[in-house]
Image (cartoon, rainbow, N blue to C red):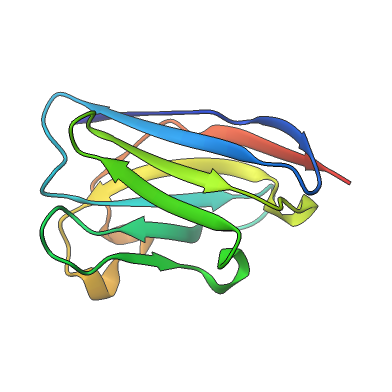
Length: 126
């Protein structure tokens, strides 16, 4: 499977962006899909994940984005989304999407993901 992340850009604090992660090569219906981010000089950080179709596990977020970001997926389009509202300068990073079939309990661990997109840059100005 190949993943293509898009939708990043420059936005003022308080603004919104929607990131997309389009999968190709095979269906990702059976994969959990996650978003991570990496700011300059920092380690890659878990942002959000959404469970594979049918498990009912739902969604998971890092505390710093709860109430501001929403992850969703459209299995018909083989695509996941990250709606980011009320953006803050500290949200500035390269955002990556990834897929995994690991147990839901581990979806916040980057090393558990088997396929990654190329990243899309989000810059939030103050």
